[in-house]
Structures are given as structure tokens and as C-alpha cells.
Length: 312
Image (cartoon, rainbow, N blue to C red):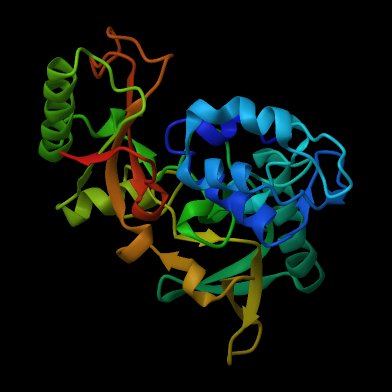
């Protein structure tokens, strides 16, 4: 559901102008029950959302209604893909299982097949399955001996705004750039009474190897592919694409070939990995990072949005 916190939380304010556009342009809004409505055009609500004025929440609460004059609560609105959600009735687990099922629907009837990936052929691929938790790989392709042979990091959506982080930094603590960014965040916190709430701190990453680790896994540059060094990153539903050779297929995204990135390819533009620090009420001063209520991640550049984004 699209609660007020979903609109106003730091790095989520960009949802407010999107809701304003739906009201202003008479675009259907999906409710949590799956039905669609048109919201009544109200210039005061539209202006409030466009200006991202959090002080006028009561105005939206009191005046939001559909074109028939029926009151509508924000909690009745669904957090669909356009608002950075996963869609009505979806969880990340459900979306992933759906992607795996669709991929198996293509592989199993023609198995065993050969997959062309990372400039080589992988023989005897018979199916796809979910990777274990807390690893970079989300989906694995396996052979007739039940051995995993291809590892995929899967992202939902179609743009860099549709998923969250590339990685955390706890396993990268010894890297000079990570240390320097943590020091800079600490310095900023000291100057601002440990109050980062409402602010995002960010910085460009200069070391390409660090960028590649954040995307493909902590064991990037390892001799072998695996759960911590994936063959590729794919955004959107995964599909097979027939190559010119007999029984040889390539992995592709239903979005486009531009949404698959093979190990070693640097991601640029909105997908470029960037340092990112934000408020997190659950983070504690005694954590490994020694930062008060602050979380540090590596985010895609296009996902770093907010009213108060500061480069440090």
C-alpha cells in the first residue's frame, strides 16, 4: 500500500510528483484490492505533491477523493511498479519464483541445451532454481548432475529506479575508498549533531574494481564463477534467445538486450554504482561502521533521489 511514509520517507519523496501527475492527467490509479480509480483533480493537492510539502499532509488526508466524490485514503492506493513497488500482491520472493518458473517453462521442454555466456558454451543445462540466501546470485542454472553451472543476479523492473542497492559495504571495509567515505560521513555527522534524517550523502566511486565487486559479487576477479561472482546481472523477466548454432541459446531480458550485463562490464549512466548514506533508525552507534543511525550502501546513480542530496 502507498502509505504516507511511502511518499515522505527520505529517498522516496520522488513518488509525490508521480502521484500528482496521475491526478493532474487523469491516469488510473490501482488500489490494493486490484481495482482502478481516477482521482479527482484538486489543484491544492496537486501543488502540495509537486512541491513535496510534508507540512500539508492533512490537506491530502482530508481532500483526496475519486472523481465521484468518494473519500480515498492513501493506504488504499497500491504501491505499484510506477511508485517503485513490486506490484499488487507481490513480494520479492514471489516475483523471483515467477521469473524462475517462466525460465523453466522455456528450458525444460528442450533440455538439455547449451547456453552461450561469458564467451564460452555451457553444456547440459536442464533447469533453473533459486540460489541460497545472503549471496550475490539469485538464480542458478543447473545440469543433469544437479550441479550449478551459471549464476545470475536478478533485478526487477526496467530502469535503475526500479530496484534498490547494488551492495552493502561491510565486506568491503578494508578498501581505501570505502574507509574514506565512512570517515567523511562520520565527519559530516559530527558537524550536524549526528542528525542525518532527511538527508542523503553520496559520492562517486573511482575504483572500477570496487564498482564491479558491488555489481557482480565480492569474489569478482576470482578464477571461477559462483554465488559470490555471478556470470551476469539481468533486469526483468529472463528469456532464452536462439543463437545461430544448433541447440545453443543466449540468456536475455524480456525488456531488451541492454538489460543484461555480463561479468566484467562496467555499468554506467543511471546504473553507475555510487556511495550512498542515509538515516536508518535501526542502525546503532556500536555497529561495525560506528555510525549513529546511518546506513551506508552502494546504490545505482539513478536511484539516488531526494530533496536534500549532498555530495561529500
